[in-house]
Image (cartoon, rainbow, N blue to C red; front, side, top):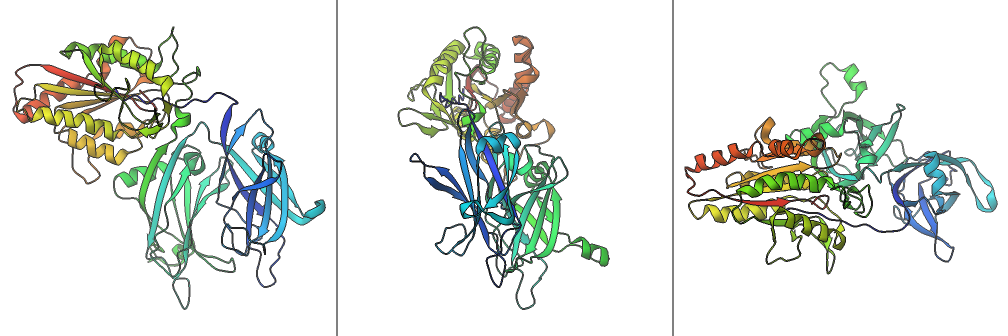
Length: 532
């Protein structure tokens, strides 16, 4: 069983909050151009002195900057957390303080004030409390503690329009999301790639809250600009998409969009685009510090209640008790992943939950249950949910069995998980390889997470393919969301979860032309760091 167990710390209730900044009507301190503003975030030290803890990027030649840099802060409801924002006309390297920077104004408030109002706009004050003209700063707060997914994106473009007379365009990309009130929120701004009509921008990482408010169908817009040192950037083109479309297009190898300039589109009948923007990489990750919660907390999916088994235990017992009737020695290999384990508390994606690496098997399903309950207090739930190592480990055992020429043992891997698999490409590769071996994989989704990606692994809607395009020989994966069956009887749950296993067993032996001489089924279970 792949059991992921996690971290839980006692103390004040802590939430994670993202802060986004923008300014209006800043003072112009540059004689020939406009100010180049950046904002420093300061918090009091233990000695009470204001200490810089972060700084935005520099927005060149702008008196109304919108910053793409996001500050992530732990918010403690019980504490007064003072913040100070200082705006500078920056003369040093981007994002770095310099003695020659001109102070454009500051603002002080508490994090609680920002969180309570969600959006705070205050005037900027100079030294001695004087107002900095009409200058204001706006801080927007978004709680991301319950939406703990992250995504890493990589974009490039090709054949962009050339906006410069004596050289090529200097393109950069801005990504916006649509808000519920119809406004648009800057999500990210890439670096400028000089003199290049086919730029490759650096990868960047965003929380799913920042990208799309954790709504996969929320509209997103990409704008491509030719950078101008005076701040008068030339518009090249735009494209629209959603995070759901990004994922689906990327999975099919077709994640690219026409970069369209509406002005040219209206004037020229033959106009097609002003270039093409391509999503070259998309990776999803999960912060498991928050996903399962403290096992001592009754809200945690891993909470151990002596009178009411949690969803992991209910799914494990319902399926395991059926499987164990086909296991000759009634011993089960029980493994965990995505947790920090003693003694050094390094993250492991392949550890025995009985903490005996020489013999990871447990006596019966009850032995697995006891190992899981004993394991939870000793590890720190962490992440990510990397499933491929567990699949590969069981596949090695199945491959060794196949080499006997009889394959009299058939392996069933039961994975219990609360969230999205973060190594999807490696998992697809591992499943395709395993489809040639005497094994099946059962995945039970626990909790209320979005299990869309897990459905991809279940080949019911088409043949699963590896990232290289190799098709699976057999459909060996069955995915079941536990929330749809948690009120059903254990018999009904086990029947649904195990429905495809007999066919999968027959398909394997038929394909290999190996009539099994003895029916020994070896069952292994798995659960994540987000799950046991």
